[in-house]
Length: 462
Image 1 (cartoon, helix red, strand yellow):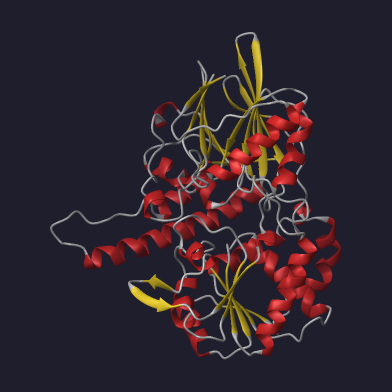
Image 2 (cartoon, helix red, strand yellow):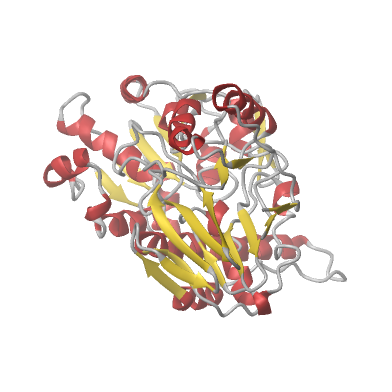
């Protein structure tokens, strides 16, 4: 068996994809899009060495774009095989990928408007029709059920606790008389993440691909993060300023809405307008409610009091005109808008209109990739470029990493610990160099296993 790493390697966090090849089968685990700047996005092409005519199946761990964003590209270029994922992942991925197709079309039109007419026009990676075709190829799986996905390869999806429907994927690969278990962690969530269930720790494997996004540190304790969030929101509300929250439409937005609803319900803060300025986030919230079987215990207990959200305070901003009208809204108010890494979407318009205002508060509640505008804000940039315009940064920028949907170092080790007894071969991916080297050193010290740090395009023999 050979496994080619075709994403989220060489210190890259996005673009997750693994090409598994045996004598009789070829399977792709995830087909993520690279994000975080032009250099990363230039890698968004068909995975090198993957012959779509011979590809038997695609398996998805969860719906986020950095794990699904190249799947429509496969369909565009002729892939017609099954795409396996949990039902929630299929529903949410459709929303995310349709939004991706729309943003790509907008970007292409904007570039072509100013492009030298003698040059070939820029085209989107794929269009909405390819997402529709992808949905038709999707095959829903149940957690824990073993599914035959190709000749000699079966798979199980195991709760990963990262977002609704997220999973680690366990492959059982049979070659001749031998059988190997290959485990892909996908993105793991912290054990304190609300709304979704905690990850399950598999008990054994021969090969483990483990994410390492936060392999060098733990997040701040979650109750402290929530307390700080409430404090910052309260301060901004008292100052009658706008609170801008760049947020992933699926997962993080619902998490923030949950905490705001609890704050308002418990009267910890006087309610004020909250605008969900993202059609995808609005639809994602409706989709989340369709899968209550995946809620954690706390949300099941809160559900009747918090859902549906109180329309006196929570408003949906659907159209572009709705979004533009928020420029005229005075604070206190909070605006949730994508994209989560500030690399596109409506949040850029709100930044352009408000970053230069001293009473604006920006709350960064998610990971910001290298080269992204969000990372520049986190690092204290005095000005940023938005649509070619230099915008001074006078707003107060606060970072709340404790809201991360990624497991910190301790939770990564907690997930891995039961696997250590089987002495698997370990590969650390989906992390920048320092986090994955740090996590690798800890695994070697604690479990006497030396993980490999694969390079982009590296072929691993099992």
